[in-house]
Length: 67
Image (cartoon, rainbow, N blue to C red; front, side, top):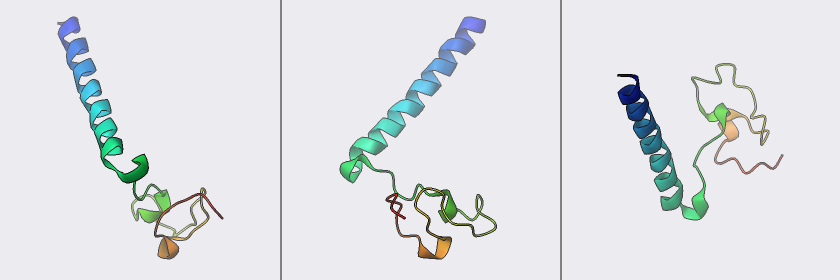
């Protein structure tokens, strides 16, 4: 029973990693779009600036890491 659960867990984890790899492979230059947390209203309820690029939610177009 435990080995079946372990194998199922590993298979699902493998599918998740494969899905992320396919997403990166399919994107131009292998970049994720919109990875700043400040773009998400669920994660940034106070409208704070991104800690990576310094942009506020109303300034966000992409996050290149330059302040």
